[in-house]
Image (cartoon, rainbow, N blue to C red; front, side):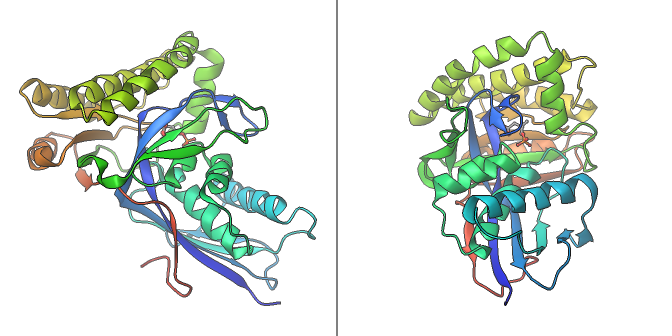
Length: 339
Ligand code: PMV
């Protein structure tokens, strides 16, 4: 038997309306819908090669052998793909997985989103399956909730779904990348690995935060407001609901026991500076995920001003600028993941 190989590339995404908390942990079903921008500048490229000569999965992330929880999540995801596409087949062939991010991993930069989207696409093709995007989104969700959105480009909405089996819990594109010339600037305030993963942080919030029910019950209204603001390209309305969603997400996490604090001093400084900039008339707003980085969303015309403002802040170590990116896609056989 020969090896079966495929390589895929997927972009990270940043949620404007956040997902934070699950309605089913085993199937990774989100308690709320979410809405995101797919980011052109942040990519994961992953090559999967099923090889009968291997006795164990050989997983390399950014040129390092993966072990522990990261390796288990990836092997478990390949098991899931195998049981989905080849339910009657013998135990699955082990695989070599080589994956590269072009951005800092696990620092609240959505590496799991692009990572599991690329793995779903490359892994399913390496298994000989030609899944459609909805199916890939549903599968990617099992790896990481936000990964369901990275299957698509542009502006994407993820449904929380109603079904217990999660078959309606998939993302879909709302608008193509060129619908609105937005930019996302990622102010890196700490490139280290975050202390509380999104999985752990949202579980603790779900289990212990008195604010969690309010967070869940407000999500539909936030999604509707964001959809409307985007359709009208109304930046002020989008800024208001984007900041509302991220601040509520963090407020719910802060009120967990023990409270989950993702921010550092530079995170707060950037939030204040972005608000001052907006008050002075620049179309810019902030959003933060499960980490200390601040993502500024602005119009293309404002990008130089916002980048200069963020770079001048003490504690901001780097600023990555991105436009809106395309859907996950296969790369020609033989391409190296590092490329
Ligand atoms: O996909 P996960 O399990 O890494 O969770 C992502 C959670 C947030 O990034 C904080 C919000 C979101 O919707 O992406």
